[in-house]
View 1: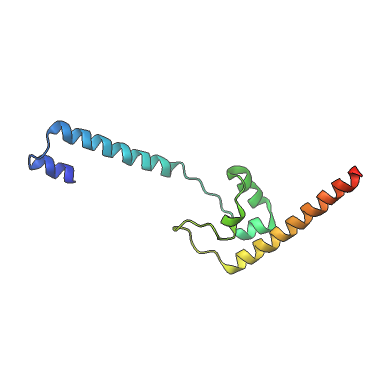
View 2: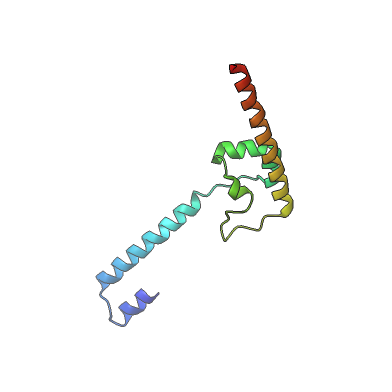
Length: 113
């Protein structure tokens, strides 16, 4: 809007106005292209904790999330708050997973001996 005003008041030429509008429109198109690439998947923290089909599909589509993100330590300022119940369920799931990994690692070591 200010570009139009500046041109209207004679503070910039038509050529300058077109250049400013072109640069601005380019930035707006870039922002919308980012928004159009946004994908979502209806998965919850409870799904990830239970490792069900929905969570496996989301992990397959988007990749594995870090523990800090899942537990709420690393959050976007635009993210909704994480419920204490979800964090508790995820911590329990991570403990079970680490126990299984330890058992599997111990079995491998026992097999090698």
